[in-house]
View 1 (cartoon, helix red, strand yellow):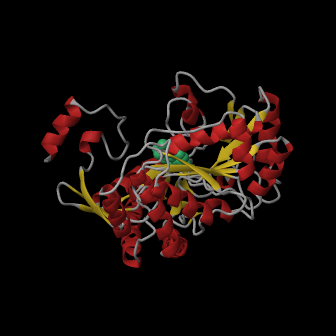
View 2 (cartoon, rainbow, N blue to C red):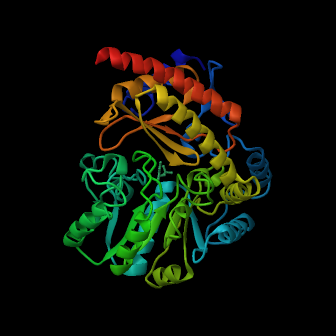
Length: 445
Ligand SMILES: Cc1ncc(COP(=O)(O)O)c(C=O)c1O
């Protein structure tokens, strides 16, 4: 299909999408035709390094051969089935996942999308505690279903929604690079958390049920909460009878250099965890996991979560193979090696490129915050857009994120299977683009 045909279909038939500041309208964007490993190729035959891992679902590499083999085999036997009955891939996935979960997490249920799992996890916390109020980070993003997950996605303005779900409110994201209290960790003693919880206590309209957050906030600006933060938060939640939910859609299953992102945070284990994205090796399946005790309490209070396709053998087989690949092919180790290489390259670049204000993240989730002035930390939105466009033109895909309305954070999410040569090529493309943006930013000043 050529560009003019695609433009016509977009004009006539595709639901409208907001223009991207650097990729333009939908009609201008690459038309993807195939993918393999760490690359995607468009209908013009141009190949891109995919440092966004698709929509983060291809963190094991596109078309991982073991996933392709597994789903091809499953397609020939049983690929859709009633979720009121058992099937072998489903049982195997419960067992395989259960065996890699740190105690006391062990029980799982399967759904389809990430948003599904978030809705179900909040419902689980509410049924298990008998409470209602939920807290989340004020730059968190947990999905786009039109009511509950959007209401908990404070990164998107809640003013955009027609109705916001009741008993949902935010606490301040612990963003040490831009601390609004102008304090420093650790002498701050987590003042942002203390103030937030004092306000939350005043605002709660019921018995509070829980908190949901990512161990490393991805879409909310690639923010790593400081050492000790979650341990302190855990204590505060326990005092209030609230459960801790970690949304590991973007951080789970190897990407942080650990099996799960929460393992970055000094022995803090959540009460409930969600998984999605590359959990299905590229196919849509998500999970909610918890302990025996919480699962039983919730079920006693009438909890259930189900979708027509939630336990499809096809999706469960992909999920099981994905977990096996993460373990057997040491994806956490691979993610750590990639992190080291990317950070070393970026730190070298930062010596000559003042636009780089901060480099952060873990494993294969790396953020580069661009600023026009390192001391003032002025967000360099225009330069970031310029860099993203230049990289796309040069064959490198990544997403631009922001924090509280800025658009100045380059987010890299390379597949964990990326080779040294691919990482080096991406870094060279980014360096060239940054050098040009640095010159034009200086000229505009
Ligand atoms: C952290 C996080 N949670 C939940 C979701 C929602 O997942 P889905 O788009 O599969 O519904 C996303 C989507 O990007 C996400 O980044």
